[in-house]
Length: 214
Length: 91
Image 1 (cartoon, each protein chain N blue to C red):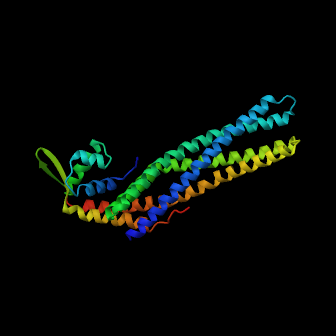
Image 2: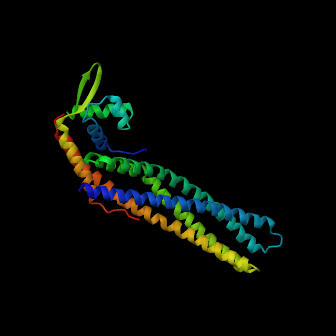
């Protein structure tokens, strides 16, 4: 049983670690794109002299979405980094224990990992939420970019290409932002199940302690 | 790393750590407890007969008693089973 649990724990720790790394990388990209789009459209708005009012309205929305996406991506990044730091400690604990992992050390690792999840449960749920909202912002941003291009089509081939690339970039980050939380949900489901089971099992421990003479 | 443990998990950690004789300071350091909370747990475990107390040149040493073995075994069995029988998280 010990070998099975040890391997399962190792795989889970590595998967969670990789998921957090993916989350951090995409949060960084989203952060950069969010501020980039916000500032770029803001400059375009300032420079615009004889732009149709509808385009000014659309560009203003783009500026707003860009800055909202920036703010959410920043929260997404900070939260991912916090969770990552502790996940790193867990993985280090596991690696150190691997030298002579006996039954007690394995149980100790399980207790620590369960305690880690209890402590970080709401943070992980928040992380999913930030990621999803930031993802939606990027998809909406991409669609708005297309709408602006449709109202006032770019005159050069380079302009068309830039619009298409910008849309695809927004779409890719948006889809990732929505997709990554599915894995956080799976992680939470696995650990919520264990939390429920451990709460039920505590009754046996309670009975044992209550049954022993004090 | 900050973790949130149940009282049963804290009891288990104290008892496992005290398989060799330990001082109060060693217990609070190893089990990440503040002195007030640690004292409460130690008092509880001592009252249950799971921890024995000895005096060595003015130092109080705590050691896990034989009577705690059943608790330690049941705890490890419960946690290992609940982990093994739960769905695995994979990327």
